[in-house]
Length: 145
Image (cartoon, rainbow, N blue to C red):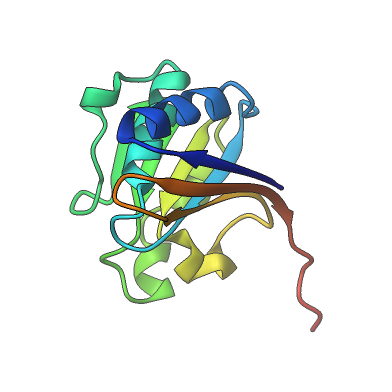
């Protein structure tokens, strides 16, 4: 686990660029945090760092649910979905099978539908524009039974 601190949106975007350089070609990345924690701001840097779009072209897919920035970069927002059944209609398994980096906001609400091996990035606002960002690699065990 690594913990970073940023003091502005620009620093958060730059951290996203740096993290993107460390990601494997195929990864599921959960962006976890309250509303306003900076998930989409970090996604701007991640998408830019992966060479899929400029930060200005990255926005939250709150209403469209999925933005495909390239065949190798997806940005998903599950905030507006309430049930696992709704999420299962999105075709995430097909996306997870691709050689792609998949960024998911609010995915922690549906962990049972996500790959057991993933990266989780937790964001927490500490002051007006300051953020504490915790990066961890997760590998959960299958449930017995």
